[in-house]
Picture: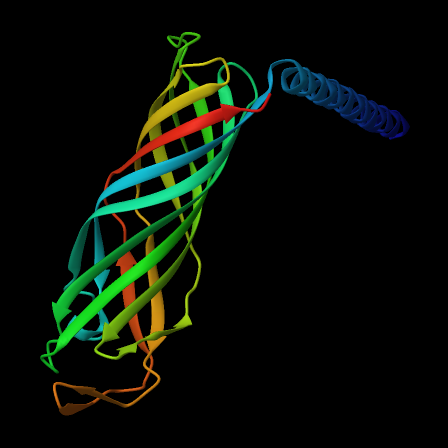
Length: 256
């Protein structure tokens, strides 16, 4: 019994010792990898990093607006208006960590509007939106790039805010609630340096932001063509979906 007990103690002691040793070695390895990664990142940022700012205009092929007046059953969004040929603008700060990797932070605004006839009141009506998109992207510059031409692909996440509205003669709805939406996007592009620190970028982007808002009319009556119409002041919902392909054209300046 004594021998068995001593062997068990030895096994336990060896097991604990081995675990402590492995734990110590693992920590050493992790610290070694961490500091190497830190110094490599520092070296990459300090030696190869560059920051650029760009102004851009964009064209989006199409979008969908689901107004409250055409909701069929239980807010099912079975009908919508297509709002096509959208123009927008934006700004981006892009940091090139190395020759192949870059990070970009951008803000954009896209507006859309459509005229239609109110289906129940039978009077002219309008619907529209102003969509604000904030994107964080990672870019990979392909090895086939040259000093003047840079080809890249990328993608990232976005946060969207939309100010949607519906409009009748003499009155426009007010925004009651506008929750933020999150999504993803993918992008491919080419950059051409026509001067040492100035470049032009052409991009094609795919994204699909969907935002649902709640609006409200602040008055219950309007007058149009010598006739008074009753308007509901209850909050109503609408939805905006910018599902078209985006083409960006931007001019960038490299600060350093």
